[in-house]
Amino acid sequence: MFKKLFIPSEDSDLTSLTLLVLRLWFGLSMLLNHGLDKLMHFSERVQTFPDPLGLGQEASLVLVVMAEVFASLFLVFGLMTRLAALVLVINLFVAFLMVHKTVMTGQGGGELAFIYLAGYVALLLAGGGLFSMDTVVFKVSKKVESPE
Image (cartoon, rainbow, N blue to C red):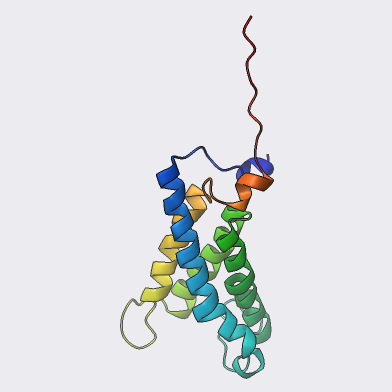
């Protein structure tokens, strides 16, 4: 049952190429523009980081760094794509809903969080496609019917 979550569907090459582009686009932009900065400046950011779930600023930042760095890397490689996308969906949903208060524009607006959220929801639903590590790791062998 759990393995079925990661088995890529048999999409066309064009659909799989599109999913690869989405994974790379959203995964690398989150990693390079958001995750690595938070990781490298962790001690400086922890004092001012929001605590939307009441877990504490440090725990909140740790969870966000794990999502934005590690889940983004998994997404880029297409390894456990749907799980990585789910982690990022939760991260961006909390950011959009609780930090940005669903405000799209202006100071502190959440438009960027909303756009990332849309991309991660698409990847959560579609999976990583055929050009992903999921295909290698979770590939299902096809049974060949013998003529009788």
